[in-house]
Length: 111
Image 1 (cartoon, rainbow, N blue to C red):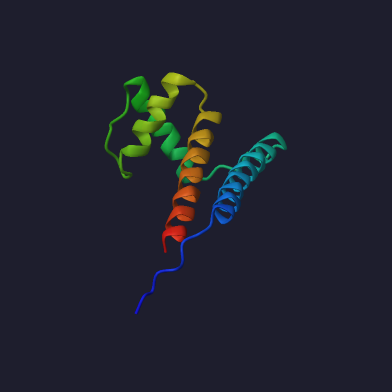
Image 2: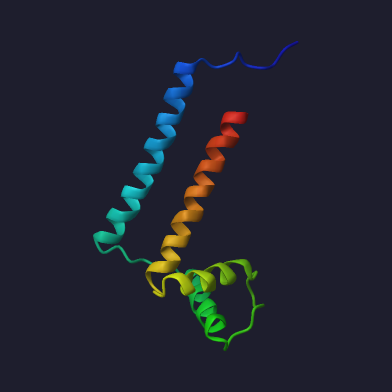
């Protein structure tokens, strides 16, 4: 019994990639509009990550805490590139959210 779906045509591939690009652009536009219209909501968790990364970036904090250190390292590295405690973590969260979206699209395509 063959459970594989038939191969997709070139036209179906074009539609698929067009929709991926459209979703990514909508994601970017939506994030920009929220920020531009003054939606500055920040959770306590994200605030804590940012402040701990800032302390570690300045040399005052510890690498290990209640959270795993990956986000702290990424934020501290990003502060070297663009030093803004408010905008930089949101850009990084948006990038990781976009990567999550793209990986879910790829996973659903494979399934």
